[in-house]
Image 1 (cartoon, one colour):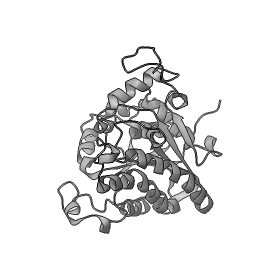
Image 2 (tube, rainbow, N blue to C red):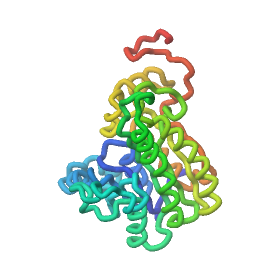
Image 3 (cartoon, helix red, strand yellow):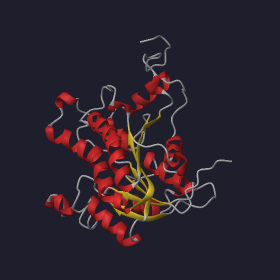
Length: 304
């Protein structure tokens, strides 16, 4: 039997703040396969996340097939908009939601990981980070600052993670991010520069695969997941419509689950995928293959 075995591997999942999205599902899948898992959480959400854990509110979702609870080795504060703490504005550093977090930059998290585990402690890094302050605005109405913020947090942060964490990776390690079809096709309502950020993320995946592969001997891939109504995705404003439409028009019409994305991430992070890098893997029930709609949002079967 061919099993995904991540025993002895250490993973970092950046972008986990609750148990309702792809990041958490990936963390759980990696743990199911035997990996030790740490997570990085946006500072404004950190206290809420810690309270949910401490009060047992996530115990059921953390339960593994062994009946044990998913445990995180470390939980790091991370705002991927900042490469170093000096890049953060003073009003951010001094705000109530940030001032107790210490160095929440990418460099700060990297140094904490180095202190906690010494040199080359990582095998797997998951980039589950995305934000666009103007995501509900059409691109034509998106400000320069809104656009650049979307690109910085949702795409350049992957470059920052590979650049900073690459030296901490063991040979054969894996970086993996999450993208979406809007990076290559028009999704009306998915605005604020997020479609541009996803396109950049996919392009950077290919370039980083070459550069980090040659420099560090590691792989870089991205999963293009179908729409899922997570808490974070609710910010888009049309997520329920996106989910319904894709289900009605995909080759497989059953709803996408976070577990399906998590299992794919575990495979791509394992030695079974040692020959896969620089690739976008679709986990969307086949929606990306379709060239014409077969059903409207209401579910009727007349072509559109």
